Image (cartoon, rainbow, N blue to C red; front, side, top):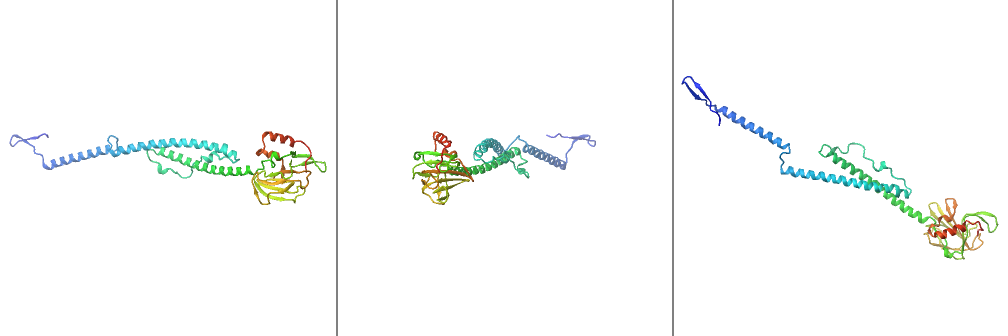
Length: 325
């Protein structure tokens, strides 16, 4: 209740009540309303910019944001584990797979190189969790790049494996005559006595004594490039091109089981033992060529002999006896 004010009236020698003007009263009411409105607006702004009071929608958004932060943290942990697994695969790729197939390792800086140029993450800046988000995106991009490089490397390894398998099948790696069909291994690679001149001469193949008509088998995959009687001394003979700069020769045959241009697999029957050409007795003269050089065939028999059989053959082949051609 507002105070009542009085003034002294000298004319009447009494106190009279002061009556406020209506305009002033209205002004006071207006100022009060304006002040109340300003105060309410101030309080509203204060509440909207603090965490003292949140609307249900704000509370829901806050919970959602907290959940997203948790999910992002879990994703970062998963990506870290993925990175460790990928590092392990890369290590095996460089030090086992690529080493085995004689391929150059992929440099570490190439596998884990970042992305240069302009700031790729500018749209992600300016937020509360920008640093966490940018770190996650960077890690994801590096993992994606590592996976792309590793995938390409494994494709290359698969091709190398196929080529290696083809190479291993092509190498002349088995004895061209079965052990049970052999009379004996007559002469090995090295200096031997010529059966016709008795002079000491280099014998650049292996002689396998066997009855006429004994089957002869291809020692590796390849293509028949000759099956004729047009080479001095060899008589009827077969030549196989195995690829990879390897060739094999089978000489003094009685007859062929293949023809020029035919493709053969290791173990295919290609001909039969004979005594044609410059030969003292029925046998197979067998040679292996690498490029333009004839090499010792005994080094390639890993595909058909046991350790004991190989040791016995090595002992016989090392004896400087007489060859059969």
